[in-house]
Image 1 (tube, rainbow, N blue to C red):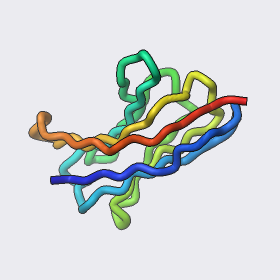
Image 2 (tube, rainbow, N blue to C red):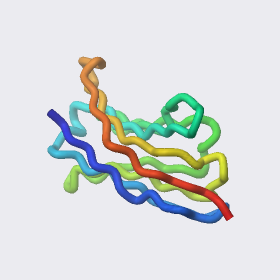
Image 3 (cartoon, rainbow, N blue to C red):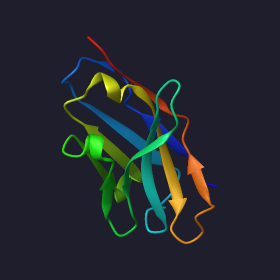
Image 4 (tube, rainbow, N blue to C red):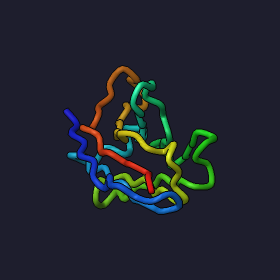
Amino acid sequence: QVQLVESGGDLVQPGGSLRLSCAASGSIFSMYTMGWYRQAPGKQRELVASITSGGNTNYIDSVKGRFTISRDAAKNTVFLQMNSLKPEDTAVYYCNARHRIIASTNYWGQGTQVTVSS
């Protein structure tokens, strides 16, 4: 069982920055793709960014050039650096760990609220 705990969500003005953290309960990065999802009110949850066990990253078009996913294996932590935030980035952000072979094996954090508003 993998436990994920997110932190870093906050209220920020448009154009501001936030860094989200996701602490995993063990050393899982070699076997799991880590992802950040978000869900805005009335919308489906969407994958924002991911990083594979090999370190390859992927982003949705709307955040390319603004968001960066990274990880610190020594701390078992994944980060999402979010710059130039826009009101449409407002959502609950969730951390996900998906097994790189058994895709049905995946875990979720509890979510952290990001609100971009003036």
